[in-house]
Image 1 (tube, rainbow, N blue to C red):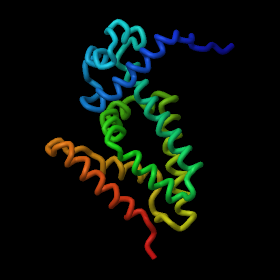
Image 2: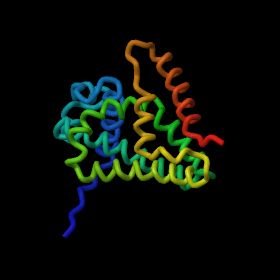
Image 3: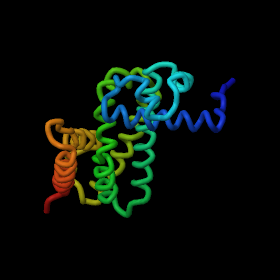
Image 4: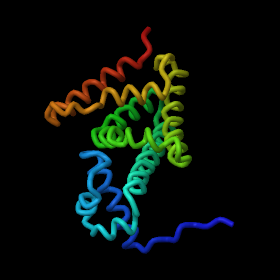
Length: 194
């Protein structure tokens, strides 16, 4: 017998979505150890409302991580399906993953994910789905002869992570400008050479 989670009222669902969105922003800025009260304040809800939706920090961070993986996995699948070439798909995915919001969230969650992802079958499956989307774009670009064949999707995600590392000693505008430049250098380095 399968059981389904009870359906939330519309206002409760909106509060849940606001809490997750606020948690994404605050965790991206300050890391996963940020006070729950700060997340509630950013979401515009009371702390009691936050704890009714998420009984502890772990459940909220897990939801943020699952939401991130679901969004990027869907983006990867959509990109591979709708771009005219594998190379176009790779370039679009690299640029998307290098966007400041996603890069900051991914970096902030990295230590938490390292500790929890492999013990959580759903999170592991979502992360694998994301990687498979990258792998599919990479294989398609390589089959077309547009991309070097010595790089896999996992390599590409690690490169993006390295290229988008925020340097706290630099102003935010400088970080963004540097990231954009480094991403374009990375993309250029992925091309096959004649």
